[in-house]
Image (tube, rainbow, N blue to C red):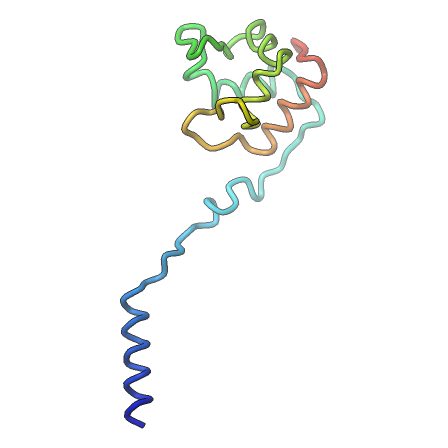
Length: 125
């Protein structure tokens, strides 16, 4: 009986010494869960420009032009879109610098919108 009590005491002590390491919250595990995505009517002005303003222009505006890439206007962004540089960066393709640099990958919804816009020929609409 004494061995069982000692065993339980040791086990309880170990459990107290090693608290749970797993403390991810729901947002960390599923950052885009519960968000609806409407990629049916993707336009440059209403879909793509806001994504660029929120996630890209801080480093890639005409005033800063980090790495020579500009995303805050249609002519420069459409060039990046049509030559594959935009998609390679935002989709974290091999051989490209993952964008946004040091941040999270864009949401699946934003990626779907960008891909659809590129596939449409990156129109200025």
